[in-house]
Amino acid sequence: MKTFFSLVSIQTNSFSLEKVVVGVLAITEKKVFFEYSKAKIQLLDKLAPHHNGISQFALKTLQQIKSKVVETNNLKEQQKLLAAYDVFTADYINYLSKYSNNVLSFAKPEALPVTFTQKEFSQYYFNFVGESLSIDIKKQNISFAKKIKPYFEKEGLDEKANLKYHFNPHTFQGILKATDVSLITKNGAINAIQVVDFSLGEQTIVNHLYETKIIHEALHKFVTNVNGEVNKIKIAFEEPEKNTKQHELFDLSYKNYKDTFEFITPDALEKETEKIANSNNIKFSEYLQTLEI
Image (cartoon, rainbow, N blue to C red; front, top):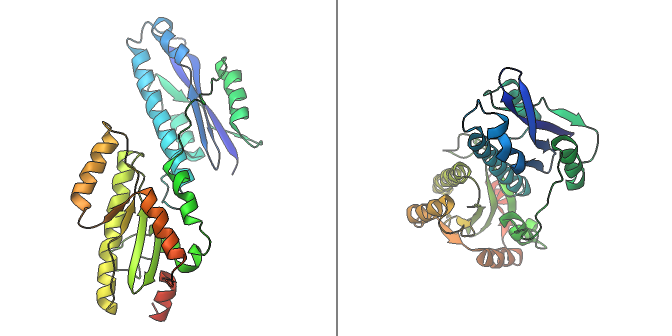
């Protein structure tokens, strides 16, 4: 995949159509880069006196974009465990470039023939925005995906379980579209683990829980037909920060689904994958073959 970049501008004069470049967006296969100038945002009310409150509007919009970029990057890191909902594509930015709310606008995405890193992005930001990009390295929190990635890479685990198993809607009753589970295995009963990152956007979390509920129901219908057993799906989670919408959603999810799912912490997840790697379990896909499914 090529790297695409787009300049984010704000119109300061509706008569002369004057614009100020306030941010740069770059899209690569593995990461989305985005930063905007807080200094320029603070000057907007002076630069655009005809747009009352333009600085607050612009700041709120840019913060929302930044938040979506962070969420997208977290999802990109989890593609082996979660289904990704990637908003930032060249086609989508091209669509945004044709849309204007008379304040914030995206330039048509341009392809770059270079491997893009933070260093290159900083240089492009300096060239187009006109100020150095200060990179905050004080606290680089390890994402939930990176934290638990080693647990799914234990030696022998992929021989005993399917990782990111793809449920075929034509095989499992109740599943209407392709749906994934992080891990599924069998030893007597069917056991599954689903990773849910409660630090992501609310809609992403809700979608993932709903999909897991559908998998739960489909598995129970399935074992009824084959005279088998299925244990509660284990939801691997990390408690989100207190006093956030994500934490409110986590509390509500636990309250509503504690009887349906088994919620496990990263420590419990590590022990569970270690146990499976050293067990006599078989892959769920191998079990299906014995049933000629």
